[in-house]
Amino acid sequence: MPEQFVWTSGDGATTIDLTDESAGYSVNAAGTAGLRSVGYELTTTRYAGIDGEAVNAIHATPNEPTLGLLVEADGEADLRAKIRGLVRAMRPKVGAGTLTVSNETGDSRSLICYCTDGLPGQEDTSSILVGSWWRAALKFYAPDPWWLGDQQTISVGLGVGSNFFPMPPVSLAPSSVQGQFKVDLSDSDSPAFPVWTIIGPGSSLVLTNNTTGHSLTVNQSLTAGQSLVIDTRPGSQSVRLGDGTNVMTAVSGYPDLWSLAETVNTVTAALAGATTASRITATYQPRYAGI
Image (tube, rainbow, N blue to C red; front, side, top):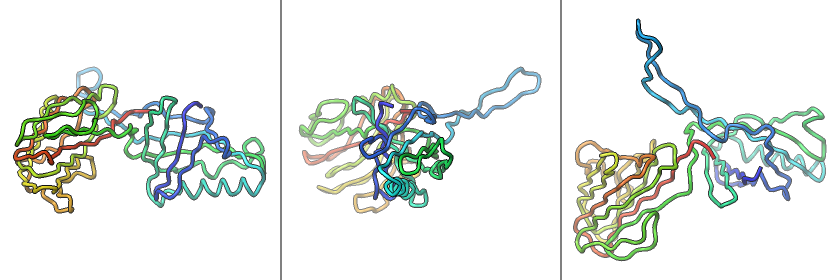
C-alpha cells in the first residue's frame, strides 16, 4: 500500500512505522479494511398507516478499521523481539494510541484508537514461518470515529503577525482587535472544534461563527501577557485563564462553545481594549470519515 502507517503508543513512549520494510514491517492490502469511511446508524420512528419510517437522527458509530500486517525477521530471536515490541506498544491499558496515515503528498490523518485484537496472530504454517515472518490482522477500536487532519492555526491582532491559514496576516485598527476571516472545511466530513487562545491586554471577547449563527461572549479582562484559553472540543470544553483558573462564569448567557461546520465558515473575532501585544489565535483539526 502506498500510504505510510505509524503507530504511537498510548503513553507516547513508542512509535513504530508499520510500513518500514527495512525494519521488517509492512501493511498489506489483504486483511486491511475499514479505512475509507465511518459507519452510520439511523434512529427511526414508524408511524401507523404510513409507509416506511421517519429518520430522527443519524449517528456515526465507533470506527473499527483492520490492518493486515506482515513482520519479517532475520531469525527466531529477532522475530520474537519484534512481535513482543508490537504487543507492548499496542497494549490498550496504557490508554488510546494514535494511528497516523500519511500519503505521498505529505498530508496525514490520525485516528485515536485502541488495538483490541489481532496481536495473538495465527500459528498455522500459512501465517507464520518461525524465524522468518509472521502475519496478523490488527483490529482497532476508535470511540470517536473521525480521522483528524493536520492541525491548522488562525491568528489575528493589531500588528502584522506571522502567516496563518487560510489568510495572510491581518493588521487592524488600534484599541480593538476585530477581524473577519474564512475557514474552508468543505472537504471535511464532520464539524471541527477549535481551541482559542487570547493574549491580553483586552476585554469583552466576542467570537462569532456567522455561517452557523452561533456566538460566544466572554466578559473577562486580561492584563498584558495574561491569556484566556477556550477549549470547544467535546469532553474537554472549558473556559480558563492561562494559569488554569476556571472563568466559565465570565461567559455571557449560555456558554455556546461553537464548532466550525463542514463548509466554508465566516468567523468574526473581536477584543476591546487591545494593544499591539494582543492576539487572538485558534487551532483546530479538520475531521474526516476516512484516510
